[in-house]
Length: 184
Image (cartoon, rainbow, N blue to C red):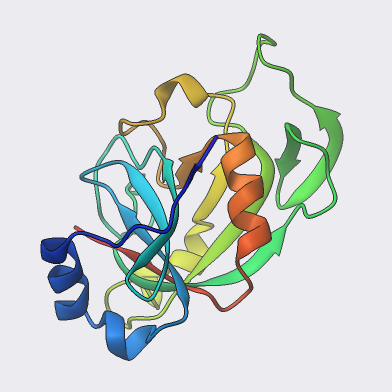
């Protein structure tokens, strides 16, 4: 279950976010911070942590190049939301429900996309937008996973994996256009 909190982000982390343009990009609105170092996704409102979820970013590390199997960095926005009415553990392929539901303990394809998708759109030309670096064209998501036992350490092929309950919770708390910062 996600941490439901109203505590403030630590001062040193807040300074770092501000140095990366948090005030200009987000102001006091809700936004998501993906912290690969801590393998954590935080939903922030102003300086307050609304939710914190363990995640898995890419095994291959950080990077934006197509076919790198790395998690892209920089400023993004949620470009689309998929799966709002499907059951928990619904198997999603090509951003559509397959009408199948995975159950913990079932055999599985590696790196399944389950429950919900928050598809990311890069906002920084030359960093995560355009050409070989385009997050949208790479189909980078925050999504539920069949590998919840790996959360808390790098284990994905580029996307940000969350537990199925956590991705549903986050999906319900954010809108298309919500800013997402993935830091190095």
